[in-house]
Image (cartoon, rainbow, N blue to C red; front, side, top):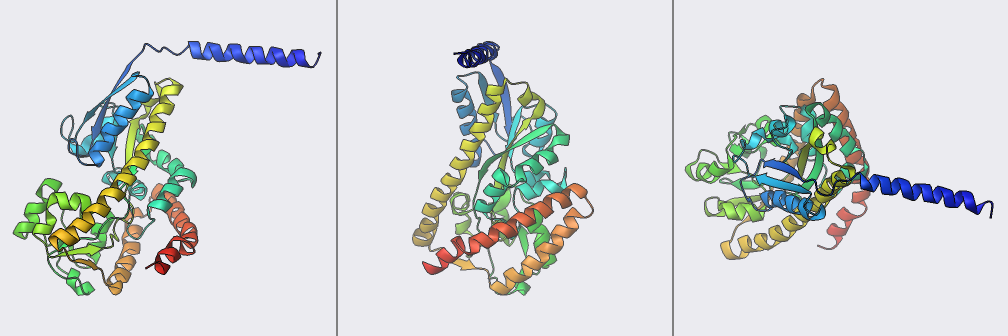
Length: 357
């Protein structure tokens, strides 16, 4: 009995502390957040995910957080979303981190790297491999907290108005392709042209550009590229995985009670799963439609072309990170995880798909 009494006292004190903690939560207080995105309003999957997140946060919090979503250009221009959230004009944003390479060279390694990690590897690195902690370190100076916000999965290589049989066919090629992929194309003798999404179709049709990469079959079909180009190439060497993001103003996030902070984090995890699942579903259905209903010719890049582009990628990355200590730190960690996880995939995923063809 003497031993039981102290345990009962400790249990009673613990319950009292828990009750005090719960009593501090003001369930009548409502937080109103504004979300800005880099996507057009209600843009399929990407823009939808922003609203999906807002709805989940509202439902999971019992209405204690209300998030108003603004598409790109409705509150601030699309590519000013990062600054808007950083400065507190908005509380949370949606985009992809390679848009912010001008802010930090390290940022793009949390989005897509040519010949880099696939979606499975990226998800592992960001979740349990130390990638997320590095991402937070990169965004810390900007008063931002990043969260994974979905992934497109492996993308397609793009739509071309000429055949790509050798590296020579890339020389003089004008292509809509952003980020590191654009730098690699330029090393191959092509020209990376930055064309807004709303102008890609017209630019292809009028010959302003000779090729364009967008995302994958689902979005490419909606853009109508199959009507004006001859060849659809794969794989998307430039974006083997495109990790999307949400980014919250750190001060706004930390001003929330602990339970609401956890709700925001949990809602982003749900969005991460939904976006990839939706892309896999819609891309599979649309690829068959393109092939069967529209007789789109899907071609693979020749292996010698991919081999040389990979060499150019290594050069472009080294030039990009230069002597930036944080960028070098992040890329070193990224590359190490890609190599270690890749050895496992060679014995599992890669071998499996080779054997079931």
